[in-house]
Image 1 (cartoon, rainbow, N blue to C red):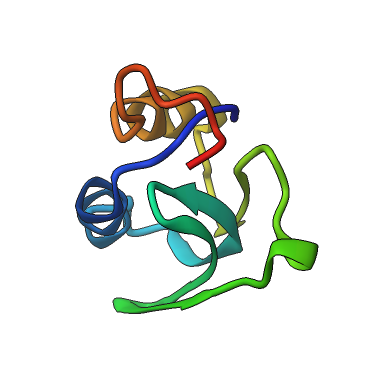
Image 2: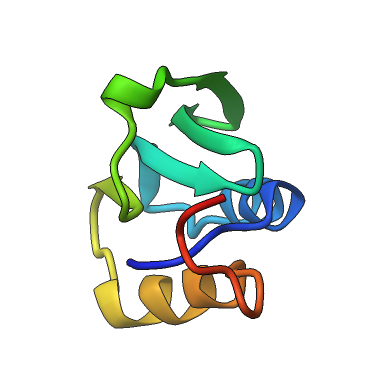
Length: 88
């Protein structure tokens, strides 16, 4: 997913994941730079990544049962900052 994500929007998205998803992890781009995120059964953590570890695209993995990929992607796209070009 290309673009820059709103940190508060992503957190709200993760807090409202369907019950079948119990873990999410990956690298995301926020306005201030790239971060590693971890979500596990309601707990959320993020940490900044160095420029060397940053990637231009958001990369997230969702782990669980009965995952509707297209629905998740549509909801995640709503977290993108309009005009965000992925370069912070």
